[in-house]
Each structure stands twice: as structure tokens, then as C-alpha cells.
Image (cartoon, rainbow, N blue to C red; front, side, top):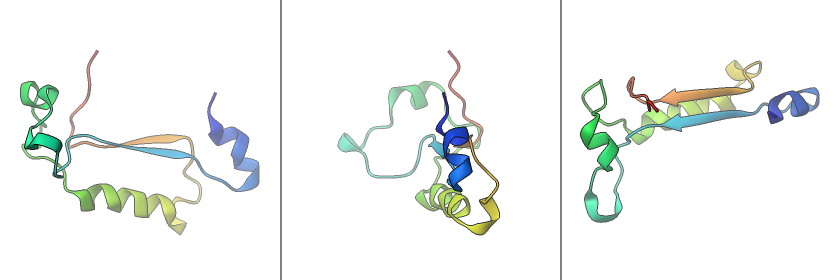
Length: 81
């Protein structure tokens, strides 16, 4: 079950930020193989600030009523199983 309904009565929101390929330093400097075979549709990796911006939003007053969400910061890249 989700923690969001359990914690909502206490004024606590529960959300998840799910980034895709982000322009950060990686061990060995390699792009993970999955991104090499399925590039990000926006044509570039995301920037750390783009992920941080979503986290800032969720921590701010504008997201007081946002809970139980998984927010993808991924340039339209989706994992298809």
C-alpha cells in the first residue's frame, strides 16, 4: 500500500521523483546501455537543476495538496517492459 493515505491525516505528503538520464558524472563516464539503445526523445540528458526544480516544487507551498504521485523528470523517456 501507499504511505500517502496513511500519512495524509498528519499533514504529510508522500511523492516520488523519478529522473531518467541526468547529466551527472558517472563511474567510468559511460552512458548506461539502456539509454544508448533507446535515447531520450528530447535529444539530450536532463540537467541536475531540472530534477532539483521538481523537488523544490514538491517542498513548496504550491504542492501542499499533491500527494501519492510519481513524477517523471525524463524528457519523455519511458521504460517499456
